Image (tube, rainbow, N blue to C red; front, side, top):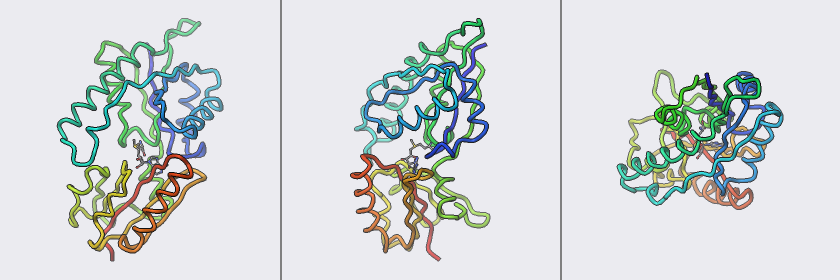
Amino acid sequence: MRSVKVIGIGTGGLDQLTLAAVRALGEVDRFLVADKGGETAELVRLRTELISRYAPKAEVVLVPDPPRDRSAERPGADGAGYLGHVAEWHAARARAYADRLAPANPAGESGTTGFLVWGDPAFYDSTLRIVDRIRGLGYDFELEVIPGISAPQALAAAHQIALNRIGSPVHITTGRRLRSEWSMELGDVVVMLDGHLTCRELVGRGLEIFWGAYLGSPDQVLRSGALDEVIDELVSLRAGLRAEHGWVMDTYLLRPLG
Ligand SMILES: C[S@@+](CC[C@H](N)C(=O)[O-])C[C@H]1O[C@@H](n2cnc3c(N)ncnc32)[C@H](O)[C@@H]1O
């Protein structure tokens, strides 16, 4: 029986790998890696380093990413159009991966295919949906999913806070949805995938922010404080970091002050 492993690798350095991830990496015969073209050299370097350290004999197959029309992802873009577009893109990715699953190895045993997932597969990652679609195309395999440290966890640890207040929920959303979803009743809100610091539109609402970029890596940068007081600094800091590194990934928690 073929097997597939979806392995969360954490959001930063090699030291974020769990022991379960290290064990699973060593069992993979072939890694399928999306070739995103524009991906930063730093992210590619981290992935290559962890494969050569923990799975030196594994084969790495780059799979060209099907083209994606990002116009449907703009803030305010029609939600149904966005979801339909993403579904089409996932189907194209599934077809591209299905043809490249690890074949039987020289000992005649079924090969193991590995997918590396930034952070944890449970948060804003399409790998598990795509693996499901590969099954839907008629491919049979055992699946193992290894959790990793996700950006919200790394954010909380870095700021030495819990994400929820006692007995209260946490809402996790994207920058694209923040403006339409936010209300004071939501309480604590974690925002991911926000290239525009959309929280600037919530100035004057009595919020506190806990912000982090490059979380879990040696380049980690943190800021916190009353949103109204720190937002100007955050906007210029983020722009400066982006210019310096060529990319930036950030996550933040918004919570009512007091
Ligand atoms: C496509 S999602 C992937 C999330 C990932 N699966 C996880 O568990 O964190 C990418 C978003 O995750 C957040 N993110 C990922 N890595 C990060 C990091 N090292 N520092 C800050 N935010 C990060 C950012 O909000 C980024 O826009």
